[in-house]
Length: 373
Image (cartoon, rainbow, N blue to C red):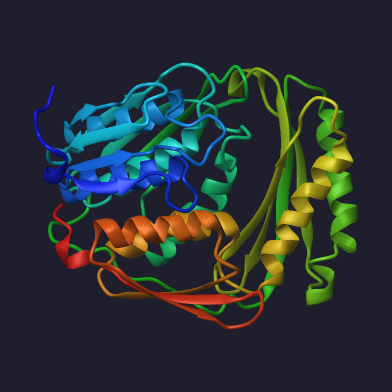
């Protein structure tokens, strides 16, 4: 066990703002990448069941693997974490804690650590891919990845669904490929202010271990709702709508699940999403309505990011070299928390401007020159 005192560590109060697992994951990622020891206390104090759950421990263990870190407190129900990182080492890493832990959240904790490495890396993440504990992995693939490719020059980065996994059984698997980055190459700043016109709305409704008729019903209901949605129609879009209905092959999914993913593609290359999961006792129409409403809300503010992409991009902007400028909707508590962690762990600075009642623009001067690959 380490004998270091807390004064040797960057201290962060886990009860700050959102007070959940995101603060923990982002802190671990910054610690690993920047070589800064951290001491977190009051971990997940803002949750009904405070302290770490298995999926939070898994995120820490994965981050610790990447940098050969030593840890204290990385166990279920712990309300503190001490992590002392070593250098990040590219390689082939696997996380498989069992159960239906949210693999998209583990990706958030690990991906930023590896994008500056000179050599390529891979991640195999086993758990839940489409659960209520996080945004569905399809939104990561359809929305986050294209943004990272286009605006942060992370071409070659790929996330592949090997097998879907649902709550409560899990059993899903992701395979993530992270290309090496030329020595000394900084992460460029991103500018996404003008969304432009929506060119098309696309999507797919899926089932696994359930009749395809359920997927058909979600698809048809979403198409109908998109003709007169409360938050899209008044913005004035009249665009092609393409929604597929899919029953996942038994080999491509573990257990039973269903859901729908919608995304709007714009002329500037932005992708805005809306999604929902099916569950026992819930009608296909209700699931479709939730996804359409979410898409509509994310379109109505006129910004370039949906509510989930907001907070996921903060760490990349904080690590970029130069000033990033982004427009989006009202900042979520997750985003405000991500900004707070970035300010504690890096030299990044944030300027936020309220452009209208529903539209925000913010500029981030990143600390890229201080990142050590």
